[in-house]
Length: 106
Image (cartoon, rainbow, N blue to C red; front, side):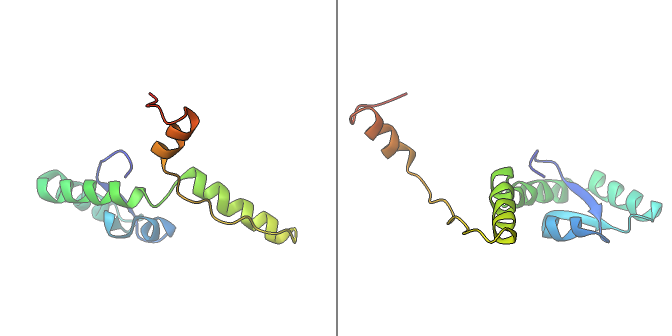
C-alpha cells in the first residue's frame, strides 16, 4: 500500500483489518477468488487507482517508529515502569530557526 499499488489480501487474517477499505480481500484458499480479484483489478483502471490512493492514505497510519513506541510501552507496563508520553509534533521551521539564531537554514 505504501508503494502506491493496489493490494489484494486475505480476508481470514489480521491483514484485512489492517488494510481496511484500502484493499480487496479474498479467501486465501480459493484460487478462483484470487484469480477473479486479479482480473477485476486488471480490467478496471478506476478501481486500481482508487485502491492505490486509499492504500497510500491507509499506510500513513502505520510506521516503524509508532510500532516501536507502542512496543516499548508494552514492555514498560509489563516491567511496572512508567510509560513515556506520546511525542509532540515539532515545528521543523521553528527548530531550524532557533538552531541558527533565526537565520534561514538549508
